[in-house]
Image: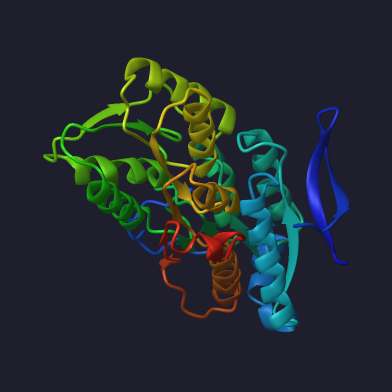
Length: 337
């Protein structure tokens, strides 16, 4: 078993611990970065120009250890095994999806330790200054899962085209809802393009259909507990609610449980393609979800990082695709792809 490195905080001091390995982009194509590596003599800048001397040193940073992100790690490891000698990857994760100080420290540590590239699922705009500093030191920074438009020094983005995904969700809901129905929309994190696009696609599709759209009073933060609270609010405000759509699967799964507990027959749809969502669809508790492919995000992200360090061309936006999951194909999504 190979090990992964995890940056942890102990009494306010940052340290690297070793543990056994275990197991959100806007649709717009970002412009390729015109940022040239800094001329300052940092370890990363020096090693970036000498990539042929050995494997590319990559820091693979995910938000926190849940199935979606551990699937990414597994895929990155599989890519590394299949391309032996191409990359030396170290894996980093925080304890929650909102621990910005932890992820900021991980980015800064990657610079200090001479990594040549960072492949990261950024927590939000708060980590942009640290990523800018890394790019200024010559590191190639590849965003996976979600794009941050404020980060203009990115090398590439490997992620879902969430505009297309939101449109696909909207098209499906338009096909199963009718005039007079009411749908509650549960937002993820407002201001994050990946999540906003998932909601916008549905709102746009239902415009003019006669379906009433109401928005949950609070963000779910893609958290199950918060999703349950928002679902309770929606069902209280609209007792005859026909459907619930969530920008993330965990809140959708929670909403389905709330509706079931209340004896309400509500069509519930999510977005992510979590295995638990596929199980809920099989059980009849959810109707559908839009699946993403975290494995492809990771493998294509690492490949882009290696190519960029080696001076090879890299696409600015790498679309990793989506799929509509219903009872017809839920069995194919009982594990991440």
